[in-house]
Amino acid sequence: MTGAIWVVVERAGNGARRVSLEALGRAAALGGEPTAVLLGADAAAAAPALAPYAKRVLAVEHPALADAATTAQARVLAELARARAPRAILAGATAWGRDLLARLAARLSAGYVPDAVELSAGADGALEAVRPVLGGRAYARLAFRGDGPRLVALRPNAGPVPAPGAPGAIERVAADAGAAALPPRVVERRPAPGGPVDLSEADAIVAAGRGVRGPEGFAVAEQLAAALGGAVGASRAAVDAGWRDHAAQVGKSGRTVSPRLYVALGISGAVHHRMGMDTARTVVVINQDPNAPFFRHADYGLVGDLFQLVPALAEEIRRRRGR
Image (cartoon, rainbow, N blue to C red; front, side, top):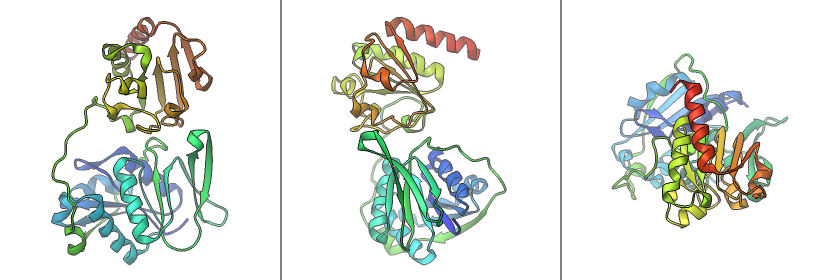
């Protein structure tokens, strides 16, 4: 697949979230020209950190983009895409990325695949994307047809971060003033409650459910997550009981995650929960009920008292890692 493949970068300070770097790696693997697109009042300041991962960095700047919502960002990107005609536009399948690409697809009348776990070029060179369907019980391969850019939101952890190479060219682009200044705008940002590791980008997630018996039971999940360097998630039952904030909920009505390791503590394994973590590389289930449905979907299973098993596992992991 030739031509420019844009990756709209989700910023993290003066750098980028890992999912954006993963998307740049996917763009390069497709054979196109990976182009990082940065939006903001000071986009050029973040461009050097992205240059080793892209052939080109477009730093799209306007003072109003400092606090612009996705409505204004989509307007700016649509004008730029019409002028430059990229072959495809990628972003992370985060709350921001899904919202932005949906708005952009509507403005460009372009095809859009959300929540993709795989990208490839078909025999005829057409871009193809794979995404889970039917509650994660099957996968659909979707092929784009016709002219115009193809828009895809990629799940975090669906691919590796590429090795940095020779820095690509940095181009500063002045955003259309009228588009960038339009409302709405963000007036306040509040950090969501949670641990030091972002759930959507964590390599390891320890999720707890009704089996931990209460909010204090999450201490064992936090202990294991700390030993693994991961994040703590929760089932809907635990969130509905008020034991954990909704930001930690994994499942159809919560977060969708794709960690390398997913450990489920005291979670029965309802399909609505599995829909949020069905692309995890390795699944470990710990439950005292040997008939829990989750065991049928696990790579490894432990039957027993999690309050005895988990602290022992955490201690052994710390010992092996020299902590």
